[in-house]
Length: 191
Image 1 (cartoon, rainbow, N blue to C red):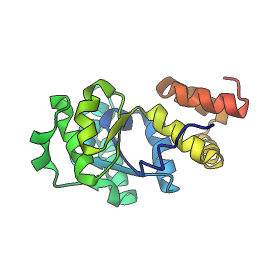
Image 2: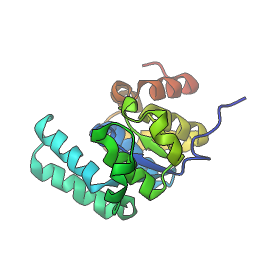
Image 3: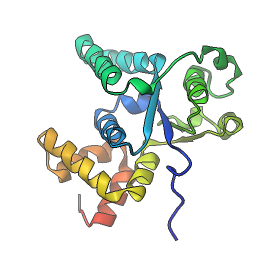
Image 4: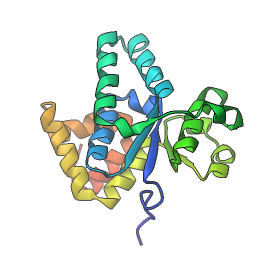
């Protein structure tokens, strides 16, 4: 018996800044969103955090982070969550990530995708019928629901940036190892 799908319950996924900072994961998730595998959400606070992290910790030029924001606005205008500040004081998760949970609640998302699961304990998400999951878990669910689509997206992603599928999976393995392990196991790929 297969595991229940996240997507049957989670059509809207709010992506935390720490997920969007990871270029390979961001690219994969956005490509899947373009194929309507799920609907991504974020806020200006999240995108500002992405930009600050890319600039200050990874040395990305400000022009490139502005370009990223412009592209997100152009290609995903429906992803931007606004008018959630009034909910921030009601959130019971980690103080620095209350804006993330508030945006998810306001948008009626049912999943927050984050590497910082400890910042979203169950007691803080359950009242809002939300779940916090890591990006590997979301990607595994999307793969289980639509394996052919996932493979097409990964192959196109690899081709578009001048890599083989094998090379792209190696890059993704650094950020989402459990997802890549599942794909490799089911597709008979050895890294």
